[in-house]
Length: 159
Image (cartoon, rainbow, N blue to C red; front, top):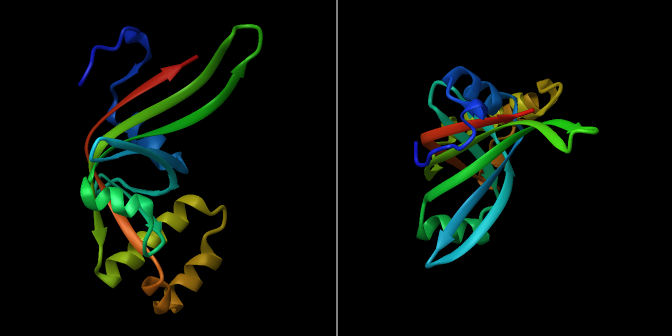
């Protein structure tokens, strides 16, 4: 652990719970840095438990890609909002912070697998999008797929 959490009763140390938050989440906010300049971006993602990796798709070029090319190290947060607690001045949540490095997925078969993983996590009924993605190989020429290999993670839960 990188720091000492002051409220130890809020620490999530169970790896299964951390993975559950990542599996049920839809968005991660990533912190990127290039030459001392910070950049924060929120992305939808898919989580692969076996690979311990998050996958994203993005445009062929853009600011986040320039930051990642300069410095692939990142830190990100996924938050599960469990709602404001009326009358308590408190908010119920679980959050997971991940540290790792981002690389680009270039193999078309792996890109397709990653895109299907994202669709499965993000869509209420992924069958329509799955059919579309399996038929259209040109889709993978219009996007870049990124993988965040998780090196470390920690979690916190609040009432």
